[in-house]
Amino acid sequence: MQTLDQLLGIKYPVIVAPMFLISNTKMVKEALDAGVTAAFPALNYRTDKELREAIADIKAHSDKPFGVNLIVNKSNTKYKAQLKTLLELKVGFIITSLGSPKEVIEHAHQAGVKVFCDVVDLKYAQKVESLGADGIIAVNNRAGGHLGSISPQELIKQLKENCSIPIISAGGISSGAQIKEAMEWGAAGVQVGTIFIACEEAEISEDYKQAMVDYGEKDIILSTKLSGSALTVINTPYVQEIGTKKNLLEWLLRKNKWLKKYIKMLIMVKGMKKIEKAAFSATYKNVWVAGPSIENVHSIRPIRAIIEELVRDL
Image (tube, rainbow, N blue to C red; front, side):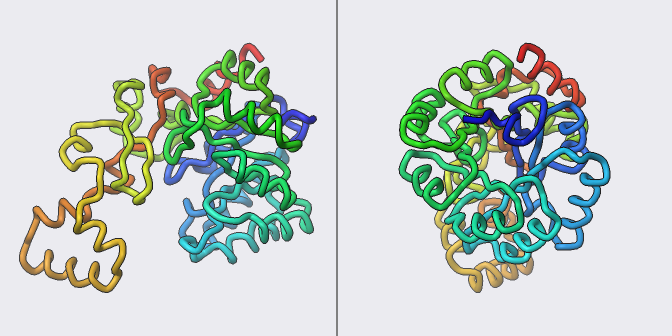
């Protein structure tokens, strides 16, 4: 079976993970120049024009393949338009998340675009393989953000024994030794996110980047405040203050858009700051997503330096 570098024609079997509100064209271009590949979420760009400009910018810089992460369920109202753009501009690969990749795989293969699918267990891995996926992004219980429930070794083992397409291990990677270990278990390559959050090129707050340096693995906890589903965040004083579980008001507002509109109006008129803080304060700007690999982030550096250290011993 091909390794990821053989499959994509790159030097090292590494994908810099698509990270919501973090990944950008500068990071992707630096990754391609350093011999790995990278992806960004389509939803990091608000309009089709911005998405097209981002893809064109990267393609003008490098002929190496890069990817775009596409949310394929009903929550992404831009899905159809985004898919059309990705296929028209022929990105190197699409990473599908949160839904059936059936339509993406069918259309992508007609356009000569590869499709890798996020999975957290064997059942879904077998499903996407039957649909024709080119590879599996095996999201384990060491991943940052939305994570799986199975350890890296066990998940790779299960998939290797039962699937015949390349497995890309996602979660818990911060060194070349860990990449080698994952590939010894049967992975074709790895996807790495957390250690790149504190790169100079990321257009996030300096406080977020510094938190990546100041906090460690013991400070990573699960929260449902941001998306309703559990994801890993840094346990900052702010997170401790607002809590990690949705309160009743947040639950009601997520269920009822009409109610949300009028509660916002009430808050504005009455100046009810306590309610406003309880219901609307948790955003990706002040609740910071990261995984356990934060333990190995010791400084804010150029992404090229982080990659070079990661692949040095491969």
